[in-house]
Image (cartoon, rainbow, N blue to C red; front, top):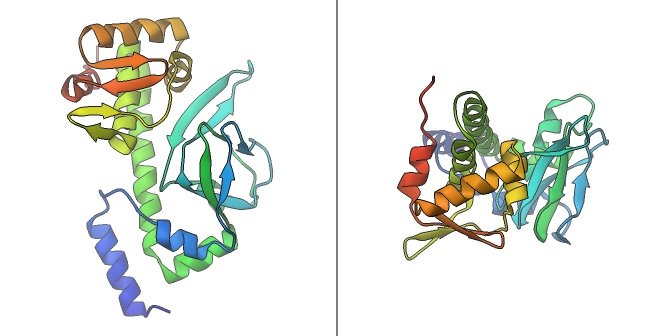
Length: 237
């Protein structure tokens, strides 16, 4: 049991470095009363409108949070991976009903936590709340840039915004080349950026021609991160 003084110090230290990506794996794995369980690619964690009793901490793999449009189209909202929580938003609702759907886009290893378990954990480790603020700050920043992309820029810029966000959070740098540890077909990218697959394919080809990236069979490699980031900066017209 940590003392109040120790908790305050941990909270203060985390706030002082809130820009750093959270690493709550040891704490959350201890809080959970269940062993980690594997989920195959395509597993649905929960559907929009379902009662939800658990939050999920992703130890390995990647999942998408999305909604289904009135036309029945799968519109991807956000991508989460190792170290991220999914289902946290329901903690802020009186009725624990999912506001979106969640699905594993790769094989995953996850820990499940009840809301009571998480609250008990926060009482012991208040810095967990800072990490959620950090995660939501990331998501808000991406959402704002995505919205601005719809209003002021081209599909190429929207694709660049999405890929730059993936690189920042999940990119693997090897010998100056950055790769993404999950497959991204042109259709998946189109779903994330809210565009047609054919339009995204043209945008990808443009970025390939300019030496920004290479995309083959869903594997994306960033060749020129500086130039990719240049596409994410646009001027209001």
